[in-house]
Length: 353
Image (tube, rainbow, N blue to C red):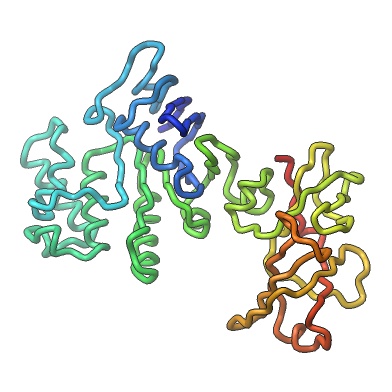
């Protein structure tokens, strides 16, 4: 299965304009709240109609503004798991699952058998006649997934599936979901703003920013070598500086007031550098790649010290740093008003936009 889409939708004050090409894998849409992730899923499902563009699944056109094609929602065979699961509160578990097969041309007996298998697969045995109102959040999610999968979707879309769950249940259901996605023979799309979930579950990541795809790549590449400011920010980078190229492996960090050596190649279009790892070493004998900062605040964490620092004594948009150091190293400092931090070249990110 594959998904090919290029759409534009003007919501008046916000424009969604995206192009995606996804194969038989799990793609994650990673972005801040309100960036257009959920709206992308609704366009694919047919709930929201784009102003222009096309949407194709496995070569079949679901939407094409130029050809005036707009396949109805119920005929798209697209499974969308909403954040609130969208179960029918007046129906029991079995009836909710059976609703997933309402449009399928199958004998009633086969539908009943398919429902029985889904109940067993999602560990819902004994709950078939229970109202969905009586179920826990985890059980409701399993019912919603069962209902989607019995409809035999060509694409499975999950909109923040763990957002309403506590941390323990979230982890438990994530493991179940990963098993479901591993067995699903088609394209899957996960929407989330949780980078840890995204990394564990997805194959590729599309970073969404202000209604457009800021970056698209394999998950490992996105996290280890983000090419844009937004992708670095969303994958956990907290410290940035505007940068100017000095040579192929050195930049001038304007907000930190030092030249920085990096193991990554620096091209002529460099705009920012960032520090990938939150944990850094206090400089001892090093002279190169050392940044001197005033300590604004020191916070004792369970295992480390979190330091809020300011470079150069002047506040700019990027001059304040968030650095983690060892308790041992911090304890050995006699002067705790100022620190020297060593920037390891392999942990310096280089971004061109």
